[in-house]
Image (tube, rainbow, N blue to C red; front, side, top):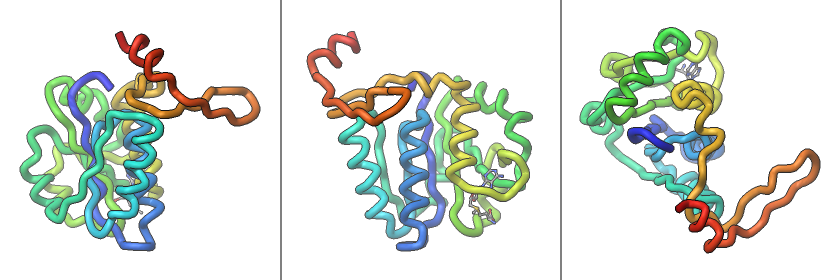
Length: 186
Ligand code: SAM
């Protein structure tokens, strides 16, 4: 995606129980325009799955693991957005957040279980996608779509081995011809 980098931090991961949700946070971040996801805890399995999808369906997108998520939040060289049902309505703060993204990088934090209060204090914006409890995957998807104003839906993918051929009915995946793909990119 154009613009400054967007990193998603998945804060917390219960091995086994959260594998699918953590994987979906990463896949949603990738599909909807973020540049990078940082996972915490014992999330080697989700990391492998997200990297495998990126290898096959394209990027650029990177997956990292950290043992020090608080250091990432505190030291992030840009603005920090924490998605939480307790935050300010996304529709009220999306404009200033877009302005901040034009100026520099964004870190978007989503939780798993209870998020430590210092994340609420350190965030530049605590943002609710509604003030109802739901899911980090849903919150992230709506937030990224608001951030990019829908442009992420038309993005191009680099270095994909395969691509889906959209169709009204049926399923078709075709190999990507690297020569045609590089011509298109010029
Ligand atoms: N009770 C937990 C807490 O203390 O934040 C919420 C756990 S919830 C299952 C997991 C994550 O989903 C949250 O940390 C938050 O990132 C996201 N989430 C849930 N509802 C949300 C909402 N309405 N708006 C934004 N994010 C939300």
